Structure formats: structure tokens, C-alpha cells
Length: 592
Ligand code: C2E
Ligand code: CA
Ligand code: CA
Image (tube, rainbow, N blue to C red; front, side, top):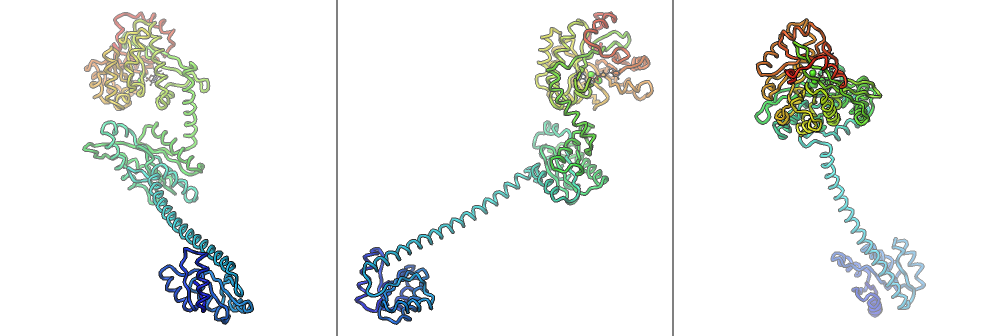
């Protein structure tokens, strides 16, 4: 905008500006008042003048300063170029300063050179342009920041959802393992009351999944979770740590408080529930760690885990609180586990054979193969101790293979009596165990009719379908089947018939009591009678005295085994025993 009271001067200045800024609109006004009102109305249309070229020559300095002030008031970033009489410049500067007009105003004196004016206009236009661009940048970046903030908010919301999912179990809606551990960590760091960590694991949950399907299993987990939530104290936390494993965090419990909480949990877990039209009942085992010596979440969870395993080993459906003794035995177990790994390749296992004799004649009918482990670290370790560990770790598969091969190799030398091979549950439920054993028998050139396998009830009950398939293959080939430790497990007579068992081995615990306790004698007598009616033979185990033998015969046992007749012996000693026994061909059938 060119402001000049002289029309002629105004024209000259307008054309000068147009030459410098050919794309811009130039307006001429006679006075600043006119110029300002023009600027204000133009402002509303978004096209206000930004560059004022004010011709103040011959005008009072105060008036000029005021009009400049008005221009700046109309537009704060306005560029001002003032043409003033040279003599008036100091007074004008003072008047401008008094009114607070920006020092940026460019005052040119006298009748300035058009080149000088053009330069000032060009410089002002350039300044304006930069300031507009930077304003636009500023606006743009403000917008970008706004968008980013929105994005951050969205991300945060999504993160919250993901975090919730990462810390919660989708089936039950309660905390999962990560959430549980984090909660424990937070509680420990807050250093509040003494924390108790409970790990609850359902017993035999797998069989629910296997027989009724995973949906039924899920339903059971949900129901038990809800039931548990109902018995945990206020302020306690319940989590599902995995499949059928739950965690409870409870603080400040007395010994009796902890005992009653565990009992309540065991009770609600063991309730009978309807799942998909079936009545389902499971039990639970609980491992407990109390915040004492253990300070960290990792240590507490580890201790609760150790206690849980101890509760399982002690027979399930119970709780166990961690103590140092448990830790010791856990370390010993770990040691055994590692030893088992090496033991086989290092040739530390050997087989012994214990005679099974005819109850009346005492002739050797067969031998039970019993494994021995001579550990360089721990000395001779009982199979009763290391077989269950090998079962758990899976080492039993390799060890069992070795036992079967070695036993079949050893029994070739006897020619006549049978060998009775113990198979642990895991080994027997291997999918191709039938084919495997028959192959080993063929390799050793031993007829399957000379082999008896000893199974416990758990080996059959754990997976009835697979057990019956494996039994089928073996029985068809002539292998005979004995039920070991009868009387200690479920002793479900149903299985005897269903699985065509050939022989029942009555557990030593009955034999131990038989001379003192009429009840044991009655049980042995009725089992023998039942077995006879089903065409099975009965072997009584752990016979240590002549008196026991007499009563067992009276109870109807046809075969006996125990230290009274012979301890387990090396393979090379068996022939001498058979020589003495004068074995005859009629006594070779297993369990005869
Ligand atoms: P089991 O199958 O019940 O074996 C009988 C156990 O009772 C053997 O203990 C045997 O030595 C012992 N015994 C026999 N007669 C008497 C007696 O008159 N008095 C006493 N006090 N004990 C007697 P062992 O050899 O220590 O085996 C313990 C358990 O380890 C076995 O119990 C069996 O469950 C397992 N086992 C042993 N060898 C093997 C094997 O080769 N494979 C598998 N899977 N398990 C085995
Ligand atoms: Ca046995
Ligand atoms: Ca036994």
C-alpha cells in the first residue's frame, strides 16, 4: 500500500513498487486513516496489505508516527517504509519510539533514489515472504504435532489393550503367568505384608481332556477357577498360570490361615461337577512358598514349584509348604536326573534276576528282571528311587530299551523258564512298545511265549485305549501279562477281565501282615479265588519266611517270590540255581 497525499507522488511510487513486485496488488491511499480502514476491511477478506510505503514528506512527524502505529496495529507483521524529510528524521524517530512503533520501520530521507526505494521494497517483501513461510511451517508442524499426539493416544490405548491381553488369560479372564509374576514383583517391591505364593495344579486333568475333549477340559478349568475365586481371601489374587495350573497370591496369613485356605482350595477343586452331561471329579495338589528367606519373585515361584512336585509325589490331592529339606531332596533329584543321563552310556546299569517259584515244589518257574544302578556319585541306588525319576524325565524310554535288550539276551541261557519284565507306565504307553519288544525278542532269539510283562494299574488306567492296543499286539504274539503291586492302587477288578490279565502279583504289604493280620489273609484268599475263577495265576511277592509261605499256600497262591526263596542274583548265577532246582519241562509256563 502506498500512502501519499500527493497523487503524483503516489502514482510514481505505485509504478515503482509494481516493477519490483509485479505479481502483487498495489493500492494507493491519500492518508493513513484511509489506508488503515482499507487494511482492516481487507484483513477480513484475508488479503490485507503487508507492506506500507508511506510518503511522510512535509507532514507533521507526530501524525506520521501515529499513522505508522495504526498500520502496525492493523497488522503486527506489517513492513513499513517511510519517506521523510532529512531534517525531520531525528524528530520522527523520537515520535515513533514514543508510540512504540517498531524499529523495523525503514525510514528513507529526502527525495530518495528510486533504486534505493526499490531495494527497500524488495528487502521488505523478502522478509514478509520468509515470515509467511515460517508461519505456514509453524502451522503445519502444529498440525503434525496434533496428529502425532492423537496417534500416541491411540497407540497408548492399543498398548493398554495389548498389555491387558498380555497379562490376562483369555479363557478365565484372570491374570496369566506374566500378570501373576508382575503382581508378585510389585507386591514384593512395595515391601508390604508377607506374601504367600500358592501353585495349584489339577491331578489327572489330562484324562478329562482325553476322554471328554478339550472343550470339556476348558469348561472344567473355568468352573474351578470361579470356585477358587470364591474362597481366596480379600486382597488375594488368582491367576491361571497355564493349562490346569493356577496361582494364588495371598498376604499376611498365619499358619492356620494358610492351612485353611489350602484345604478350602483342595475341597472346591475336588467337587463333583457336571461337564457336558458327564459327572467329572478331579483333585488338586498345591505347592506353597512363604516369603521368608526367599526375597525374589523368581525364588518364591521356584520354591512353590518344588513344593508342588513334592505334593504330587506324596500322592496328590494335598498341599505342601516349601522348606529347606524339600530343597535338599530337590537338589538330590536334580543330581540323580543328571546322573541318569550319563549312567546309560557309561554302562552303570546291570540286571539282576529274582526267582519266582512254585508255591508247593519251590521249583523255579521264572525270573523277575530287576535293574540296578551303580552310580559313581551316590553308590547303589534303588530302582524304587530312580525309576520314578526316570519316568518323569523320560529317561525311562532309553533305560527301558536297554533293560529289555539286556534281559532278553540274558534269558537265552536258561532255555526253559520265563522272564518277567517290569514296564513302567510311560514305557508301556509308548505307541509302538508291542512291536519294539517283539523285535528285541526276535533279535535275541527268545520266543515271546517266554516273556511276561509286569504292569501296574496306572499304566493301564492312564490311557486305556492305547494300553489295550499295546496289550493286544503283545498277547497275540504269546507274551503274558501280570498286574504288579496288586492291592496298592485302585485294585479295580474290572480291568482284570477287560484286559485279559494272566497273572496277579500280590503286593508285599499284604504278605508282610499275613501271619499277624486275618484281614490280609482274607483279602489274599479272595483275590486268589477270583483269579482262579478267571483263569489267572497269583504270585505273592516279598515272601520272607516259611510261615508266610504256609499261609499263602492255604490262601490259594500258586507261585511265590521273595528272599525266602532267593534274592535277586546276577545273570551268571541263574544257571546254577536252575541246576539245583532240576527244572522240568512241565514247569515252564509263566505263572503255572
Ligand atoms: P517290584 O516290581 O515290586 O519288584 C519287587 C521288589 O521287591 C524288588 O525290589 C525286589 O528286590 C524286592 N523284593 C523281592 N522279594 C523281597 C523280599 O522278600 N523282601 C523284601 N524286602 N524285598 C523283596 P527292587 O529290585 O529294589 O525294585 C524295586 C522296584 O523298582 C520294583 O518293584 C519295580 O517297581 C522297580 N523296578 C525294578 N526293576 C525295574 C525294571 O527293570 N524296570 C522297571 N520299569 N521298574 C523296575
Ligand atoms: Ca515287578
Ligand atoms: Ca511288585
